[in-house]
Length: 194
Image (cartoon, rainbow, N blue to C red; front, side, top):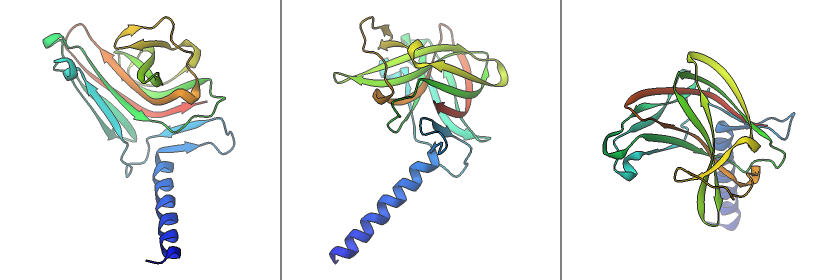
């Protein structure tokens, strides 16, 4: 294959990957400091990672699926075998430095959840979290300041954690915990960093 053909193929692959990423993450062209994740496209595969308490011997089960132009995080939380949580995350592009808050458009089930922003510090994943209570089967928009998120590592608060900065955020997601067995379902229509 000639050099010019290889170069053309490489350019085509880069363009195709850019189109795929743009289907998941939309950048507001009017406002350069906004990143919107819109789950309306039913043809798009949204790469969520689910982490259940099975990593510690628990039996909770969570899953994500696209339903009615939203990503639905659903399943059951079990307290058997010292379990009691499940979580789901999606990777983010590098966020603009001027981001100060995150807004979620959701429909919940009266359960309490944690919105979690993952960051790396000295080789460890730190989760910065904020808790919120959902209304039953009601679509709502919640807006949270990054400064209000609390740093945790494996469920424990970190008092001397570094300040959460937009450039350090690698993932966004949810975690649900329970002290008794329960079903859950949280639909997310959009996640906006602004």
